[in-house]
Length: 205
Image 1 (tube, one colour):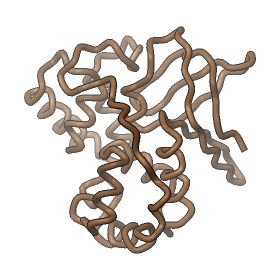
Image 2: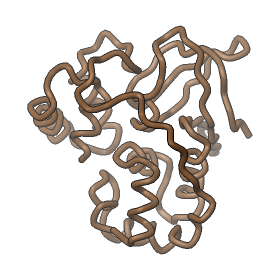
Image 3: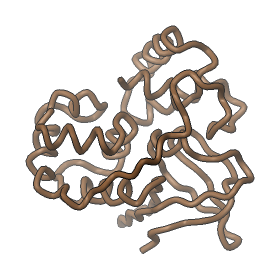
Image 4: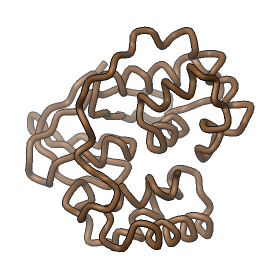
């Protein structure tokens, strides 16, 4: 099992990163909350990872902090019907402390605002995880990205930020028209100079 990858960031998007380590390029799926903390291309990076193996595919999921990785694994392993894509969507919308708080307080309404998670799934997440969260602790590390900052973080693509953000929302389960409307509204709210990750987080909120 690959639990950590450390190397050079080759490129990144709001939901993925390519990391060169030991002469091999690893494609890593990441939530927006991790993507917004990634450095510029060509700089060193380290992610805590969880590998998902299936009969017809294998995928690597990366997270900025070990607790994030462990929570992701807990969700996909303990909650029936919730797979990696939904878990990434959930962790793109809410930070881990907010997720823990929502589950602990049985806030199904907040959880169900995530694409792909309805009320029943949100309630299932709470039931399955509420008693399994005691091992999670949070440090004082703050996000290096904030809503409204200039685009100097993970989105290294030449594709316009709005298009990148729309594609990311579609990958999280939005219909194309709904994704376009959500990003347009986000740009009106926080301005055109916001990062791609900030646009996505605003659209998800």
